[in-house]
Length: 464
Image (cartoon, rainbow, N blue to C red; front, side, top):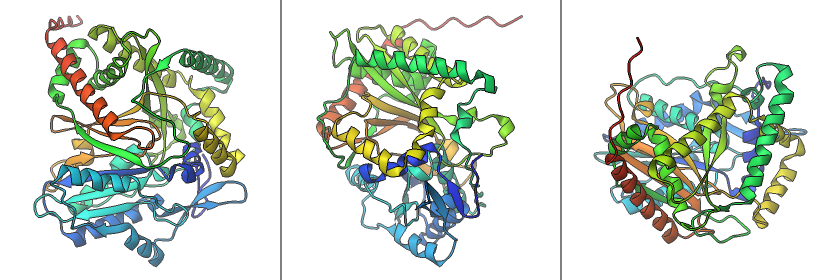
């Protein structure tokens, strides 16, 4: 456990990475559009959002230089935070949130907002007091919390708006080594060897493949992040039925559709590959004996799904993706992801300047890892963000996050799959992204139609 002393909190390796690339990538903002089923009183919204800064101390944290490393310093919950909150909170009455184009443009502006993380506070809020369905645009830089943390913050907002007590979110700062370390110390050599061997094989394989991406031109500098709100034409009920027939989860079905859409860009290339990065919640991998709490903050890992052969049949495609996703999770379960992550634990000792310099050189020389996209699935969020049986509920939820690679978020609400998709606008055009989303829609329709023609799976015999 990294020590927390008074108001100073250590950065874990992920948070250090965000601090190091802050200047290069202008922060990694996570703006979430929350549309409610009712009007909201502006004074109540302001009071609840200000209380959120109290219950989650990291929202009033700043990044501060120590003698050798950077750390969080939690600001006292006083008049200075009040002043910073006044800057962070704004009423945008002029935004026509009923116009999808205006809503998307408003969302994108926040996606590109830069928060001064060395001054605070760690959030931005925009409120539209709609007469029937009010909207809150709630945004937090990734350095202060990951997607699971954001979902809980949103849940606390809904609780507060319904007059329910908002639950404090304690600060913990364990080293992320706990999520990758073997159960016993003597297992380190074999686990490190296996993780290193796998990484070497994966790197060698990636170099031999033609990784499919949306049309892209290299830019030596980051510019702004593009954003598209996309509603998939195929409903999630039909996807779920198709996935059940194929014997996979709906998440696997959706990732397979993304991979298929990329692979169809090169139908006759035997070296064509869709390389999809998949996020993993690391909280489940910390040992229970460590006694951690909910671990609000940043605790996310990832693995790659490398899928080939554009001409695979539907069953083969989804089963292949299913096996790759299960193997990726299994490597975390077997504690065989430790090689790269252990190297990353050493980066903070190199210093923010040196790591930032490496990032600048990688961008200029186009050396960032080449992938097709980073798919992050939030699933059906209705019961996660809305406490049960509350009168004021979120009925439209649109998350997003800035990314240096194409990032489709997969969000289900009310039987529909929404894909807020972000990407680097300096590298790929809006037209090319729209073309990808159009083709992805066609892939979903075709995969569901093919699954409908398949015979129903035979019921499994019950155990005696």
